[in-house]
Image (cartoon, rainbow, N blue to C red; front, side, top):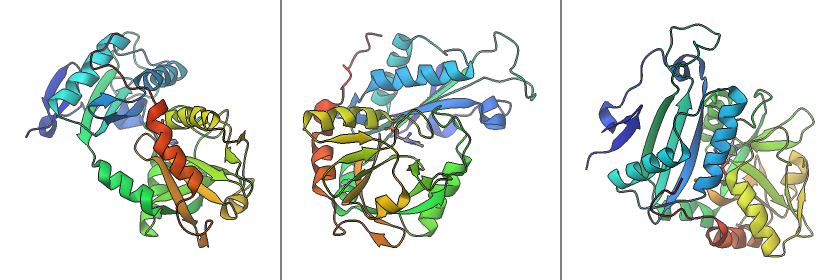
Length: 291
Ligand code: PMP
């Protein structure tokens, strides 16, 4: 079955999909992106993802490539054409194509939009969550504006590869004070000895994950006490539970950080409960976009 991608106004075969060599995303990482979960053929938390996309674009002064309604149509059409039931949709907007020069291109240069969609086995993700995964810690060497979801992900790529080289799933960044910021592609959480859920405030130093935002609601509704505060790597290593969140991992327990086993080495009850409840709270988009 052929896969399709959306590239600047056209649905094309994935194998043939290409952008211009002077796309500013390619040359300067001058662009932003979103990854949205697809479950039962429906987009999860589309509204929040598009809100965050618009914020990222505004922070970088990249014009919107199209209206929300039109974008909703493209996302759905691509999910449909690729027959995705469970998986993800990826969308990227760059500052467009222009002769290579650092300043922004001429006013009116259209932003470039690429969308892809693919199936991901739900069983595979569930397996990770049931077993728990390990993480290593790495110094956070990213720029200051990690609140913007840019495609400039080289430190994240190197951190994730360091994790893979160590035979583990994720890398947790820690800042100059020894506090955990976030994972290379996930937000970081712990549960303290007395059952308090802790995650770093999203004002500075991390991306405000959509999964994180929804999970704060889930925790409140389940009556779990939450503290949005910084926590150190040492505190994390001594925590009762640790876990990561993201659109593709939902809630995935961390059972080891560096050489320290977390809790009893098995996924904790809080993480497991939150994972189970997550999709009762996340928004499922209607099959048809209303803008
Ligand atoms: N932090 C980083 C650095 C990420 O790349 C991601 C995933 N895009 C997240 C956190 C989690 O965000 P979300 O829950 O919106 O997927």
